[in-house]
Length: 256
Image (cartoon, rainbow, N blue to C red; front, side):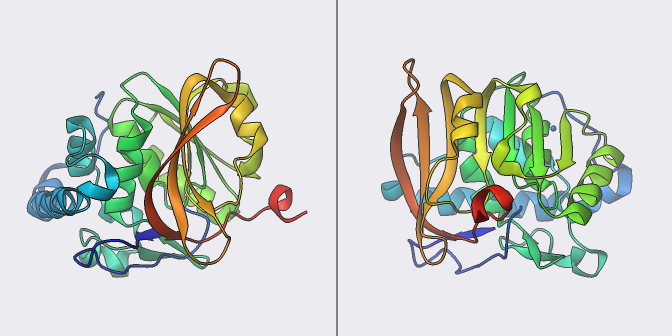
């Protein structure tokens, strides 16, 4: 999905396209969960160290405990191809087919933290990808409505999330730019690929006081990972957090 561009300790991982549950969902069972426990813990330690290092840019030096716990619990290996599962708990994106990638865990953790949502909240996601971001949110007890433009990815993510018991994560194929009006209003919106502007349909579907987190800027090159807060009058208040590089959102509503 993306890479941070600040901080020499942060690896320069670039992911590839539109990507891209504490009521705990049912992750991998028994022995498999035990086998991944230490790699998951090591990944969390690395993410926490990177967040502390990037604190001057981020404006915070640690993640919300619920985010840390969700990343630790989420079985990332279930969201990558079998041939790459040995690399699932490395802090980098990995290919998932259809020219797409699963996001770097650091970016997933940062964007989840910036959404600032609690258990019971409802979040819209533009760009499901593998379903990993939706799973992290569902691990926090958040209800997720996610749309993916690549139909095979949407179907695979839906199947994976269902098999793991993430009943709070809802996925469908389609033009994510248009949102999910039937499930609105949303407490927060997350966009997992770059746009030069905030989609008007998503602003309309965000409740007053809600947050929208996205990379905003040129479709190629660097962007700003930004947080928008919707004021009572419908306007958006923007705060830039970090320079990043995301691939662009695609779809009929963007391309026309």
